[in-house]
Length: 130
Image (tube, rainbow, N blue to C red):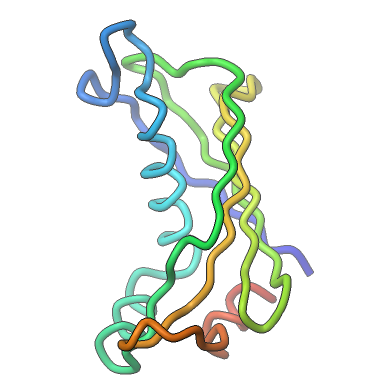
C-alpha cells in the first residue's frame, strides 16, 4: 500500500533568491517538513529521545521544472513506500495549483546513536502502511 500526504507551504520573500524565485535548496526544506508532518512529529521526537533512532537522507534527486515565487501557495504532494526493511522512498513533488514545479525522490534510512544502520521502526512502518 502507498501512503499519500499533502502539505501546504506559503512562499515568503526570504525563500526567494535575487531572481525572485524560490532558492533551489529550499525545496529540500519543504520536502523535509512534509515528511515530518506525514510521519508525525511527536513519534519522530520520541524515536530520537527514547530509542536513539533518527532518519537520515540516503539519496535525493530533484528535477526543477518551474520556480515558485513570493506569495505562492505550494502543495508538497508525497507518497512513500518501503523499499526494504531499511529504506523508505519518498516521491515528493511541489505544485502551484496543477503546475508541477519540482519533482523529487528522497530515500531515507534510520541510524542509531552510533550512526549505525538500523531497521525502520515498527511504529513508522505502521504509519507508512496506513
